[in-house]
Image (tube, rainbow over all chains, first blue to last red; front, side, top):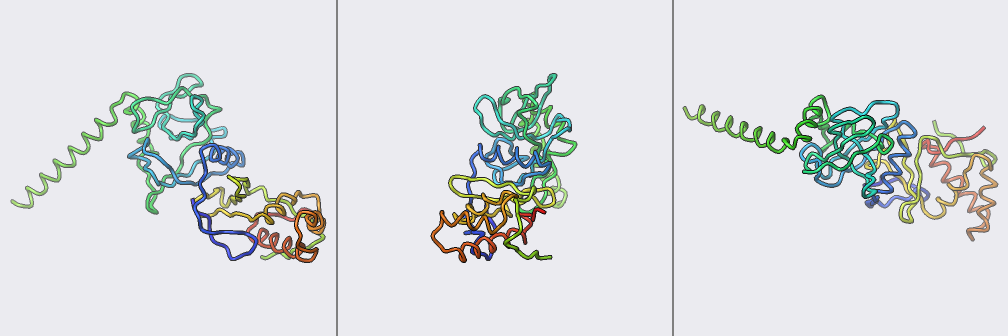
Length: 174
Length: 101
């Protein structure tokens, strides 16, 4: 993440990248969410691809008082390895949530609400808002992900798109 | 509106900032329009700035803050006062500190 340049001898800025580890980021998300605000930062990793890609800018907002719904992409601290994880809620049982990365074969773990730091409310890629994946369709994505059908779904979409392209080219030739 | 920095005034960090030490670097993230932005708006303070920030507790006047830093920095009373006023001026301009009445 970059800091902005200010012309001041007091507020130093070298435009260098400030690298934050997961633990610091967890603390920052927690602290910002306590103030009922949101935190905007760069995502790392491929576990939520294709909906969230490495380098996308995420905005995470507090869940204070609000329900965590099926399909929501949440930031939470995984109890198994104590790491900050941003994955999708694919099932709920009582007060526990099953969370899984869209590009992962296995779910993370059953997570309790108190471990959930916030919910992804915005994804930006190359300066544009990416809505597909965190909107109403997220429920369907969660169901497909839970039954491990998401890769087949994408394969199907890709095949249909290719077939349509071929058909259009054939029509143009005629 | 730019507020004038007064040495006899008391200043404290605004509620709309998050500040912390990250691997030896002191960063301040202002929360503007309800968003703390780690991508486009993050400030860092140098060693002197960090020492001043940590003493802005909403109790001591800026003059007392400058006096308490005399033992930590060998820069002379006037220079430390100037630095305190300079930093607080920058922070006030960006609404990262507030004057406490």
